[in-house]
Image: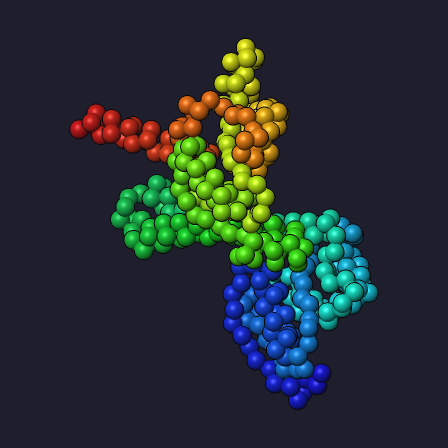
Length: 371
């Protein structure tokens, strides 16, 4: 390609998915535009050439503050390996994310990370990058807020505080902290999504975003009965649940037999054990729900009755599926109208609600006593 005679252009694009970015770069190459540089993570420079079917992929190379010899040489070894596979380094951005390209080969290796272990290792590197960025945002937000509190508490009077910092700093500290923490949550969530998609093969990712075979539904469901009704209706239309968050449900198209669902929890497991005169599963040290004893028991109970594990939510509940007419009830029907509060708001959300209620009561009582 004669770069001197080819035309170049810059394109501003923001991507929140590396897989979507890679697909877009390949579409640009199919139109005769080839990536040469990337600035600020969003300004792409392309050069004009003969349209080709290209493949793009990424990896990152960043050293810790005190790298060992293996970490120093990792990049050199990796680049030598990629060259042997036909990949060439195109450019990198400010976060040390490197972009590689090669022409498509019908029988060649068309994945930069072509085995499960290497994909997981790469995905973990990107997740750690986002986690570190999120921690920095939280740290500086807390630092600004701490400085504001210091000015108010340790200076002699409010007038002196106003002279030193002014009213503007109070608002600046509040807005900066709120926006910084919100951005930190968004960055952390992007890291989770990035790790998930980079752990997939190209084909697996394309299938996961194909609207003909996968979909996501946002819905607020308050009871187990309502959840089962909603999932059963989806199953009747051929959509099988694969993953769930408090208000988002992910489905995959299936032509199999109709599925029904049930939900189990630590409380319900212990209710079954109580009915059988067995010891309650409890761990006073397990504040965060990390002890899997009840979940192991739940899986055993469910499988004995013909249910299959679908997914868990917040370490507090598990959803199972089974073929209609071939499974036995896991729990008494009277529990189907119980609220899914812990599953909906999450553990920390529940703590915040409880703290807010307690704080409101204390403030109300204090206000009455101080009048």
